[in-house]
Length: 299
Image (cartoon, rainbow, N blue to C red; front, side, top):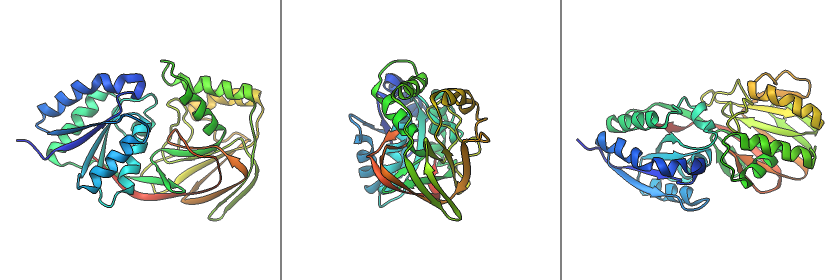
């Protein structure tokens, strides 16, 4: 028996083209499960978000995305901006797949597709997760200002087929350029911090850039965000911290301050770079960040 149709959104360029190459098999898996798929292909940055917003406003209640963290970011913003609600399923096909790891989604894309096909055919819901918001945009996995945002911008400018290592290359490129330390003021409930920083990372999930275990304590269903402030560091010290960042053993280092928050404001003395889920935002001086508990339902 065939269920009502499910909207599948795919970014064929995600994961250096992996998503596009997997499409025929994904469609086959859903067809075998008796799930009717309405296919939507993203052709440019922002296109997937606009299509998701349109479909959810038109009444679509089940959205599946085959892509990476950028595609998930657009889908989440489309769902959260819509007047209606919709559940989200993800077939991880990107470079880092940080959201999939944070949400206990299988990184085996065929296995993930089969699970979603089964759940959509039986109307099964997996779980609800928290969603973050920074200014007027939403994020699923995390946001950051300062050095990690610059790294993200540079990593996205490269098109080399080296997977997660692209972020490591971008870090070393940023180190060559110099490590800026803008002065910021951070206010979060009973927490206050002021001074120069290398970066401020606010995590809903544990991973960033695929290979960095930046917030090992983060849980995207606990109703809070994990904020890590890194004070100014030298190039040599940053290089020494990288292995710890990959292993998640950096949190107690002297240059790092960690606190759990539900809402915070960051004020910068001058415009600085930001990112959400690896998507680079406009330079700004004010960032209002909060957690929206159980705001999104996963398939």
